[in-house]
Image (cartoon, rainbow, N blue to C red; front, top):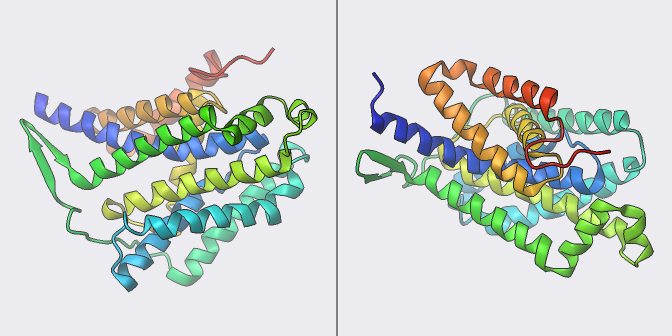
Length: 291
């Protein structure tokens, strides 16, 4: 029989990873909500940030959290360049073109990483990688707790930015009605660029904070984009709050299925949930049905 302490530990681990998944999914759903583009390369942007963080630690000894002062502005800039060079030209194109171009970007990033780093798994060991804080029957892993705390703080900051600032309101206006936003003087092209850059930066933040307890290879991005897609659909495509709820739910499902069923079936269960949602509530938990 599984003890209460083991269940508590699994719930905690699920919430921690769910918070990181939520941040990745929010970056993904922000880009979709504003530009109407499903960016299949989003998970590989997480992978790219993991490699940059890994290099900064190995070469310069910079702690992953300290490296955020480099990683975040770097990937905001990378997002802006990718938008200008790759995405801007397909905004008005059919969804099939979006898929082909972003899948092409995925393959480019994956092969670029494979060229420079090879296919081996790599990781870092910090002073807190294996440290835990014992609270009663539960041990709180500090690296995962830190990643979850930063992820949730970033989600809160992003939500406040979108609701309280003039630029955030412009982003929401462009997401709701592009033509209407343009008519009232909003520079829609600039809004799209900033939204894509913010989504890229959110992916980079998630990638950087999981480096202390995760291994990185050129192929880890596949798992992240699959999770981000499922979470975004589950919560409602374009809904930041829905992505947060969906991320926490998927984190819990993943942890508890590993405990009671099998870790190897975790992704299968996640996709089973996706199928059920698509069948009975295709607009997601907090999304709105389109009439």
